[in-house]
Length: 87
Image 1: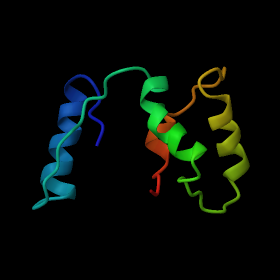
Image 2: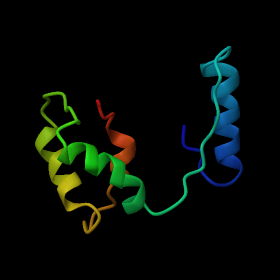
Image 3: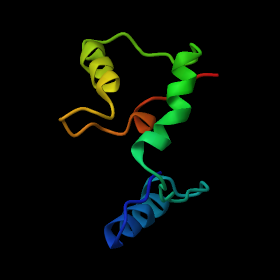
């Protein structure tokens, strides 16, 4: 799970490890690099047809958001964190 910077991120990771997934190996992960760099593996997977998207009412808006990334004027979520790619 991504660990946000600062004490709130540490508290959230601690909470999850103690209360949400006790008994499982669980660690926070601090991201490095820009969103653009972190999105590269997902982008490559999508270009190779290895990304699946469940059919839902929000698909068009979601795809538009991904296509606008990173130049959107809206605060775009991190695409790499939004999809699971299936190899």
